[in-house]
Image 1 (cartoon, rainbow over the protein chains, first blue to last red):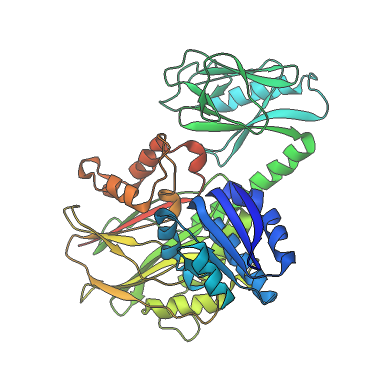
Image 2: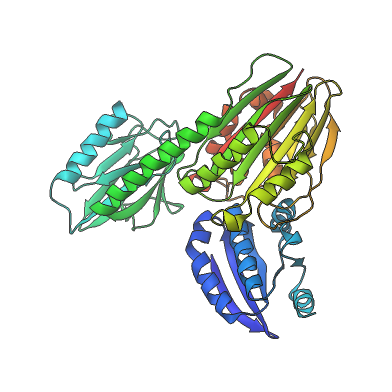
Length: 112
Length: 371
């Protein structure tokens, strides 16, 4: 699991790559959170290259969303593959962290 | 007993003062009858196989009698395959000649995998204490699980196997009063004693069949109350998923709700039809004041419901395929295999197909059959 944090139109973009399974969450959660939270901006998670999300991955995203909310910033996701989308739908995570098909839609939603 | 004796041999080798510095090379077994076992590799090396005189003896039909050798040379571990039938693998690559086993890499033999860790004696002692705590927690969770029901209008069988790090699975079932019966399964996101104890706290609420101002026969109200009681910010960041169903024995209607949980399945008496039972509700504890919905289904005579945790199907198989719940249901459709009559068979089938390091969550499978 790797991630790259950048800025797009004033929004923090975190592009994740690989399996968000238990072992990888243990490995990246602290550094991912430390890369995003101090920026204090609305954030979008790019799931385009994520192949799997385990329950601990869901927990990581939920914790991130809650932490950002304390900074009055929102978290959204985009680009989930059909398999990852199935996991997100089963958990109804998108009721809490909105999910969009593309980066453009995510930016438009988060900036509105 | 045989394995215990062989473990002693390895430990004795480690006890000879031929270890560089304060660190010991360990092979840590993360799948087996024990929650976790650690073998210290001394200068004499260790032979892994299915029978004595191997140093590490593992009863696995996929492992040859003398399968592979792990040697310690210049403070490195070296692996060689001993012409095993199914091969020896390091991080997924087949061992064809003597090769190193770097710290952090995974050695796979048959259906078992060992991680190479380089640990201080203090770490090992601390880890042993932690393992003992995990054992106690696993035993505590298991003690809360109801026994199988072999006779009566609803027969229940199950198989539960905690993962190496102990997850947060738990389940229960039984009469609810007024001709109704309840069945539920929870899965706390996380590992270790914290997740297990959180599961115990939730189970204790459900086992009392009483939640504040809540009709326990209405699944959506049960989930709503649990959501308010177990907000993750108040519980060390832990959330859980749940499937909760209430069956009316007179009308044969099953009311159910899932909170962040994948579907349970209603299986017809002939095992041909699998109907998913799912309502789209958020994870329990993720956000307060969320709405919860329920649904109902008529249960035909002889039908069963299958209820399971995600540890049952979230594996990567030996062909590298990431399984989905659909892949798992396809496996259950094999009526000749008789999986629904013997849940332990399902575990064996999954363990035989999974890359061992991906079978890393609690495995809970419950099947209830209605007369």
